[in-house]
Length: 272
Image: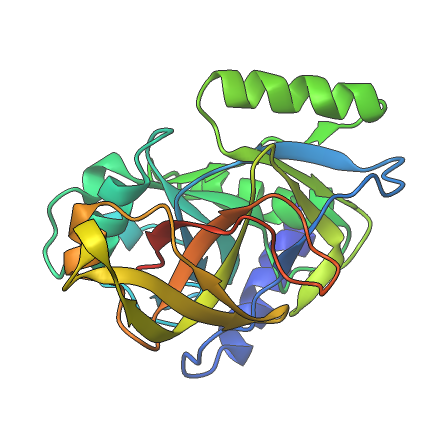
């Protein structure tokens, strides 16, 4: 895409940008062997969602983050969507950094960008606008995630195995010709060996035996319904359980005949 068009588009964004408001994000659906011919894929980074609206940095839950000024100094005046990430298998550390009101640790993070939501064109054209901006305003704190054209289903599984062998979380598959949709979209899919979802904690249940006077299980609800989770907790989780009303992530092994997750196991509290 030409530099002249980029300059004109950038000016238009600057004129039209209004006071920051919580963004509506594109959310991932699950890959279940759908037809993904002519799609692309990338590693699913296990970090904290970061949506920069041109002025402020938001999490998926619409919390405004407070990164140090050096981190966002050269961020663009238009929206970019990505994942705040440092290294694989560092989720707790990343989460602690972005939740902190201090500047410590941000130097280890980058915003790995997978879309430019308000830009025109297909995915590659949208990302090209960010690439042009970064050519003029380079920053070490933004990286564009590589999108790999998918050859076939075996290619997907091979890439997933490669990512998981390096302790990565999984794979994201995208239709590059689809627009950025502000909803859970069938045009962007996640694939992981271990399934996981989120739910809201609605009740605590006291334990028995070795777990007496501690959390025994909790009741959750999400789009699948209401169900209990009684395993996966460590001692700290049982003595200081995730509060009622909080969001947690659980792992599961498919869906039962009632549409509820089978063998749901607590994984972690969703911090942001």
